[in-house]
Length: 91
Image (cartoon, rainbow, N blue to C red; front, top):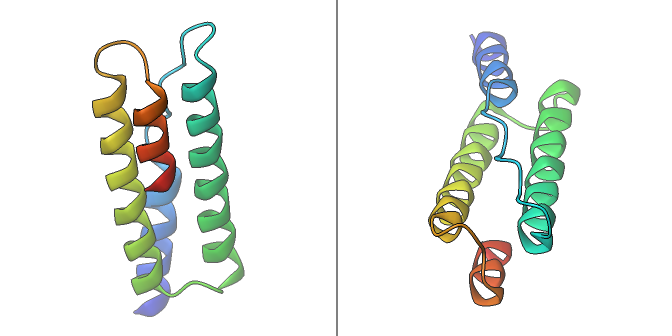
């Protein structure tokens, strides 16, 4: 049962929608996107290696979804301010 849960969660991790492509000159947005990509890779590696339980994986994925929501709100007007970038990176 645990194996099935891990397989399902690892499939969810890989099925995430790619981050939007930052506009040219959007250094803050590019940095945020890179951090999220790195986090997703670390979560996937933890699942593959067995270091993350299904519960831990689900918790981390929910956290990543919250960060993505914060980023989406910051990006809604077309650019990410320094204050917004700090908020997203802190999350």
